[in-house]
Image (cartoon, each protein chain N blue to C red):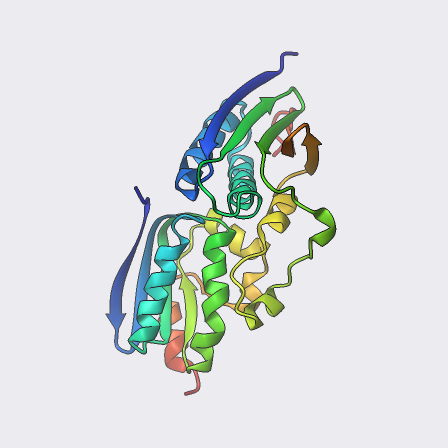
Length: 118
Length: 145
């Protein structure tokens, strides 16, 4: 049984993904499927809300690595918000803050999309 | 001082990674490892087991992974054994996030994470087994993390 789920919400043109549970090599394909669904629906501006994400391994981080360029090339981005400190530490360990917009909360992520040059 | 060992065996499938993490969490906490270190050991062991499943056993189910957590007065050691294809250190390339993102690569950080989070990582061949030992030093002084 999977201990991970993704919830979808929209805010204007921005798609929010609420991550719940533990993201590892077993559950990473579920996040991959969620991001592919957004892409197929031509939603390229994504906010990942990590408030309920309890755990991440490199397999989970790999999903963001694999899709960020594609989203940016299509004019969007993957912004990551509200991570718990222990989860943020794993992003930080691999240098993600240099390449990804990682912010404290969803409102800040939305603001960054609003202020982004189109 | 006593040395205690707790061991378990899991099938070669990512389905069981959650069980691996629970096992590590339980005994690392019981060894009074500070919570941030419990988290670090848990992630490192998850990465090591994921590598065994994906690389040593090439995602083939039906094999097994033997795990042991060994608590010594000054160290906590997690020993992971498999009988698949051995990890070749000589073929290992340090990952680079910028280049991975450009190549849309989704993996390759497991070994890097293991080394970053643990004090020592050892690879051995024992008979027909590959063995990886992840070692965390235990801080025994009161009040230090």
